Image 1 (cartoon, rainbow, N blue to C red):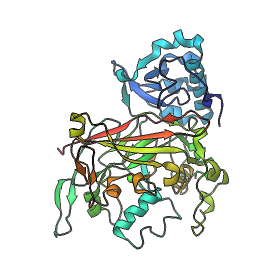
Image 2 (image 1 turned 45 degrees about the vertical axis):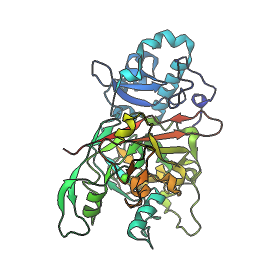
Image 3 (image 1 turned 90 degrees about the horizontal axis):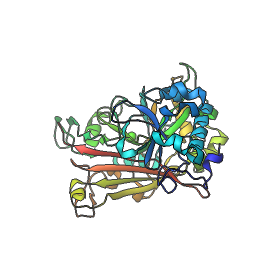
Image 4 (image 1 turned 90 degrees about the vertical axis):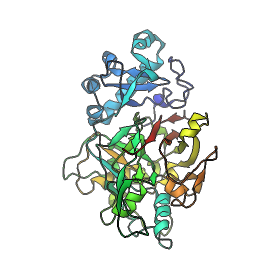
Length: 428
Ligand code: CA
């Protein structure tokens, strides 16, 4: 639903908000932060400031006040979508009305004085595999003649991940130990990962609840997505290669997953919903429970995605992060966000507010849009060259990976997702 809060001409009285790369007043993301007292509280990012929503309750809709007093967004995202939309409208009014400036100013804090927390108490985390170019590229490394398995175009592939190890941006990622078996040896060894990788993904934050046994109809599935984030599914490729058969990824994926702290609400993304690219003529049509005409017309997202790498030597010498890839979510995603959620609920699995779903690695068709080092370095065989002469096949200690996403569409103010960074710490 596009409304006055998306108007590109809208201006905020907050210094620096109007020209801000990620958080102009058209964005109004939600998150959890703490000041020096350490108390987690709900806020919104505006320019380089964080607005403390807990101090402004009397200016916000009555239906959300109890939820805003909580230390996570779970209660807020359990409410009907209309309540969160009313909150967005109220925030927009506070931040665009000059008459509210003196009232609101005491509750604005410089972002660099705030500690950001995970926005939700995450009940469950699931990772999908809907990036068809990634699935094809990875499949080709193992099956050059038949890279995509026959189920791929019929069913959104996913597996259940681990919620306990989801971390917020800037929390270091400790290189995992694991069982690794080299191709030329008979037995595995237990050793620090030697082929550590990142995966550029989007995260979907679930809103609302469905009862056990109750499915999620495709027509209402977008409404079950309260917002999005960036997600880095750190992956230990050598551990994965040995352990993944027959049940899929386990320890290779569950040591850390990094998310960006600000929830870019589905309301903020309304102008950036675009048509899902048509399937190839010889692709199967989705089964009816995965097909909705409105979802096909508006269910893709006009997001540009980037990944960067900064090594310890680059930072020490003032070399800016090196862009590893740039691609587009719409091109990458074979299944829409709504299809992912509808499929997850299609067997009667209850999804709850604050559950996290990863899309899977989002790579474009072009090699410059590959969302992992596994693809960029051709399985490690072709290390990439960095601007200072270093090379990388996989991540080394001290390397920092940054992900970014930007929503753009003609006629609308562009918004961004903020930072999703992680630095590799040596194995313990
Ligand atoms: Ca993944």
